[in-house]
Length: 338
Ligand SMILES: NC(=O)c1ccc[n+]([C@@H]2O[C@H](COP(=O)([O-])OP(=O)(O)OC[C@H]3O[C@@H](n4cnc5c(N)ncnc54)[C@H](O)[C@@H]3O)[C@@H](O)[C@H]2O)c1
Image (cartoon, rainbow, N blue to C red; front, side, top):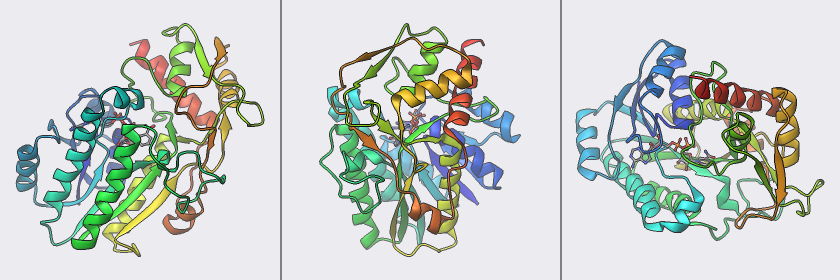
């Protein structure tokens, strides 16, 4: 079966391509390389022995999307990762985010609705919950007003897919990721953040390798056990595997609703200081960090209740925080010492 992976050369997309190929799917990846490198294809090939088909297409180009689907009529499912994802940039340039994340989605769905049946997996985010009242967060927690245009594109994306499902034969699964980290254990693929990382783990590894002088810990006065913010860090390979399982569920018509929603996390919250300590342990490095004020827009804590994904998808995160941090460190060392 041929599966389209948009954003297939990006961080989560590339790991998902590997897992799809491992399960015997034929993959065609679309990416405009705006936040990834063509070399990722070689990394995937070194892991799986097979290079996925690749098309350098910008999904904002409606006619290019149309041409792609008329050329590839045998696509059985689509996993849609392609999006811009920098929260700060989305505040500065909201239209870039609305154009990229919304138009791309609409053009894909316009093509899929022509098919007698279609299967669609969407990258959503735990940001839709904002600061949830109860921990761990279930899929039924209320959606909160988005704190950034980026977060809003995820909420609008979910709404678009839900509206479209009512009147088409598109079956979808919305996957709400908590905090994806780590890299493939082979260190052949991983995260390639452009510029100054906004996420904790790439900032840690870049500081440890000497690319950044110091890590800033934003806030030590949160109402948590050690005062720092708590997140649910999930290994990207665990996340990638969940996509394959979700896709198989749709292909086998096991879904009970036209749009299903699952949290993808480990179910365990870790504080910033716990992550730093765990990193120091696995890397044998002392990390240069300082505590600074809170960062605007950060919630106090967010970790997933994963019961639904465990029970219905039969999926559970396997990797520990230490394993995830260790893989991120291997990857950082590999790309910097090239
Ligand atoms: N990484 C996270 O922390 C996180 C958390 C929650 C949700 N998500 C979502 O998961 C998805 C994948 O995230 P990621 O971390 O792998 O990001 P990424 O930036 O590494 O991957 C996205 C890929 O999409 C490509 N792309 C962007 N716009 C495109 C366009 N118009 N046409 C074609 N390709 C385009 C980029 O070049 C990149 O390779 C995104 O939708 C993101 O919003 C990510």
